[in-house]
Amino acid sequence: MDFELTEQQRLFRDGVRAFVEKEVAPFAALWDREHRFPVELMPKLGAAGLLAVQSPESTGGTGAGPIEYSLAITELARACASTSVTVAVTNLCSDVIRKFGNDAQKQRFIPRLASGEAVAGSFCLSEPHCGSDAAALRTHARRDGGDYIINGSKNWITNGGHAGVYIVMATVNRELGPKGICAFIVEKRTPGLITGKEERKMGLRASNTVSLAFEDMRVPAENLLGREGDGFRIALASLDGGRIGVASQSVGIAEAAQAAAIRYARDRKAFGEPIANFQAIQWMIADNQVDIETSRFLALRAAWLSANGKPFSREAAMAKVAASEAANRVVNRAVQIHGGYGYIGEFPVERYFRDAKVTTIYEGSSEIQRIVISREVIQGSRA
Ligand code: CAA
Image (tube, rainbow, N blue to C red; front, side, top):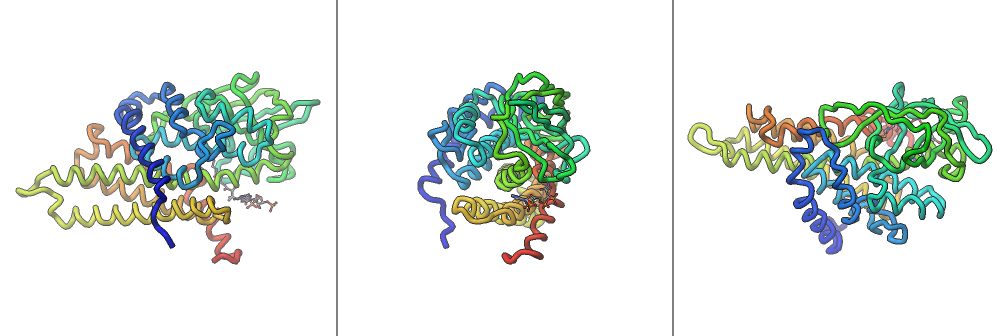
């Protein structure tokens, strides 16, 4: 058993860290304040190899693996959780195409996502009436000659207002349940693809979240991923990898909050000495560290299983539920350590606190992760 990153993985992480310190960290608070998606950053993220981390170089990707992906998302999230989700969802889309696309689809779409030419990717599963119960989606696809005609709507769509490539889940027959669902690649400017209002969110304010409507949107049949009826399996298998991303993001947010808490505890004096000298503060810092390290191990273990071709649904769910809930504890303690200063926008912990909340909600809520874990533990043989 080896708990060390390889030399190559360390170099990769350090390269991402250097990029993030220059191009992301100095602007994160401003983007958050302005609720602004930094569109100018996307080609730079592409050039840094962060938009299709796991896609092969032959398709313009970075040719790295799930561990490097996890490290990259953590580094981004330490500086700017919004940017980390923009990047994570774009990687989710390139990964869907890498894993389930045919050669033509890979050659056509992954390079655009990888370079930032497409700006971002968007994964369109949730609908106004269903998020957790994803198989209940109503967006409908009807075959018409060489095309499908898609009608319906989607909610909470990350990157939806800026994406050049969308992965859209739609059903050809609702009576078939999950088996009727298909996954399509849809390009920006497809007639009938309508971007709705941008959400004003509690956190992740520099990421873009919109609703979408599809009105007789005509998509060529060659853009179907896999076969008719494969879409639900494609979506859930892809979300397994996405959940490693959210776990890694949670680690990054928690690390940032812990660093801020330590900085403040060393500087701030009360009763004639730095508050870091008080056990009440020391124990909060210690608990934060335990939360961060356990989360990191779970995220990297799930990534390692994925990298080695082993099943990792349960482990990704465990990493996601543990790391997201841990991050919420850590940001809460970090604000507490800052006292009143933690509650105002002047210190970054206020942003970390707002950004952390959604990690227990999106890409499968904590409750959904517990369903995935308990089903496998109770019914499966891998308990
Ligand atoms: N990988 C591949 N296939 C899978 C799978 C997985 N991880 N999990 C289930 N499946 C397959 C099953 O094998 C089954 O296929 P068969 O019938 O052929 O065996 C089929 O999918 C249906 O499975 P279930 O009966 O388990 O389906 P269910 O309706 O009970 O749902 C669920 C299971 C776990 C609750 C699932 O609906 C789920 O994960 N829901 C949460 C959805 C989610 O994460 N949404 C996030 C939105 S995307 C997002 O947030 C991105 C963003 O922009 C930030």
